[in-house]
Image (cartoon, rainbow, N blue to C red; front, side):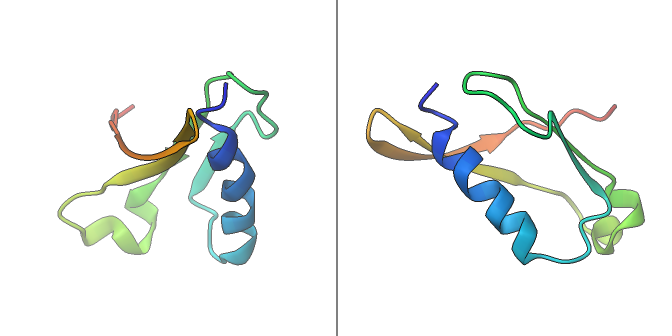
Length: 76
């Protein structure tokens, strides 16, 4: 439950500060603590379409200790 607290608090602020996020979809829009978040990104219609690879990192706050985790991609 505490794992996603920092992520949930900061991610909307990061999105609000950016422009051009039309290729990004996060569901549910208002997640509850402990709920799974799905992040979808259409990289084929983005400036990243020619990139060799993508990496998604999430900064979590676990037991009062910050942790950086790499998220596994699934091609669906």
